[in-house]
Length: 230
Picture 1: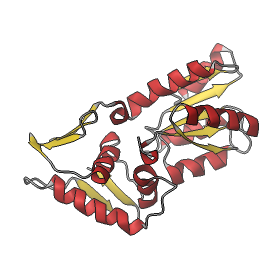
Picture 2: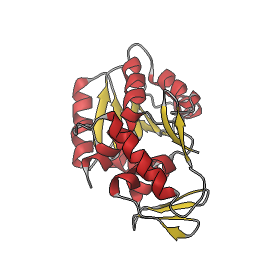
Picture 3: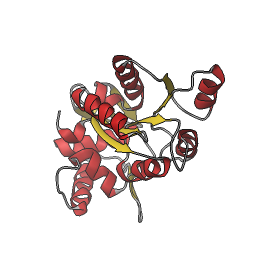
């Protein structure tokens, strides 16, 4: 799998040693890891880099993990990003509070690294099904993550690998607006320099492929913001 296709995990923890341990283990398990050391930095990282899933410590400087989770789940653009709350708080009422705030899972410190990775993969499968080879459907468009084939209204479409990754990104979160920078990170990868205008070129190719056999253009341009499906 190319680096740009690796699921991105945002690690939010105020302890540098803990961030380093998690980053090392995540990368060893085939993930791309980014990190933040406080709540405000976490919100900025989500906005700029669009992670696929977040490991969020409860006790953070500036903004608590609970408040970060609340803000993320209250915004349309980020509410579908899975959040795994990580905390030393063991009381049932704390777990309930974390889940009621919107966390998708709750892991108590100290935890087993293998269990954390299993929970992370389970949450990611639900949020980003194409990475697990599942089939995605949006209106009359079907994308098979295992065979890398796309059909519209039953007819096979000819998509290049970049256009396929763009469409996968859109179909995993229909309606979400992706900025050009977020699409560059997700589809091309942060380690590759590509001009943002390249995104527009490939969006044009994707649109052409999707309308090859007729039908309306499902890709929406949001002026000043980016692109969305539907």
